[in-house]
Image (cartoon, rainbow, N blue to C red; front, side, top):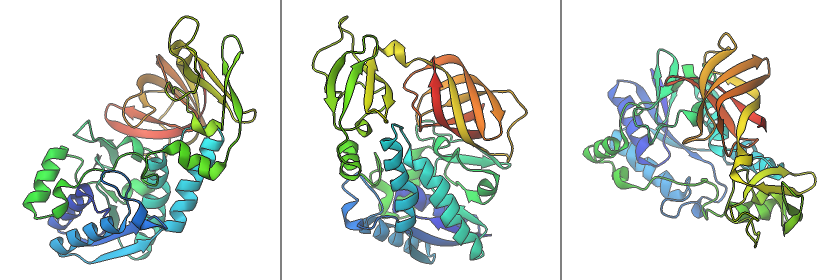
Length: 355
């Protein structure tokens, strides 16, 4: 089988490519140049897609003895990932750009080019498993990335390979060292790859500008403070609110709602964050169609954590998710992934929440 190995320059994708070679596949390595300014996007464990990363990926390919190329996807990444990220925050939502990158870059733009060139599959270093066409959680629960792959449909999964999903991360690093790969001890990337400073609020303000609004108390309606834009807040946020005085009962305040049209950020107690019903849109089903419904599952609303038993009602382009127990910090723009045991059934983008 002809396999295109997406090599980020990190240890996971290098070992994934190595295992594809060991399996007897005809493997070609490719590094995606996603930044228009690659020299600015790597500082220790922050950022990715730098010249350093491209060099690390090339050296790993040399060790494996496979052809290697760098493909420029910067314009597509800016449009489909960065621009959509900024637009979502401006609309008072909380997106996860990794899901967009997987859905629209790695398993759309890259996969489309790979298939056009005669490749059979795209191989990545994601921690997830594919068994009999089903996407499953990784063996290493702490590194599991099935959530950020839950936006992939049947066609995409049919042309995907995740060779390291059955291995804990320490063993992956040890294997890389045994293979003579210099990236064996390279730090993992953290935070949002295109915000190497880690300062999301500043990044968004530079692109959206200052849009003054008010922070108000959810119970009394009292104006507590002003702010420079709703993009600086997310539902469930506690720190950095800019509200000097504590609540009357001395308990901490949390962002409970964001209204972009008026620039209003509402704050209240933690109990105001309880969500028992979620409206979802644009569902994607791993098997190509939704399970016969309504169906029971476990819902996950964040990359790590935010799980609850649920019943999902599917109606074409929308879903209603009835939670068996309340979740907190659920925000529009996030993705709800549906699991049956460790199998991913599909996902939907969260449009609204209800107590």
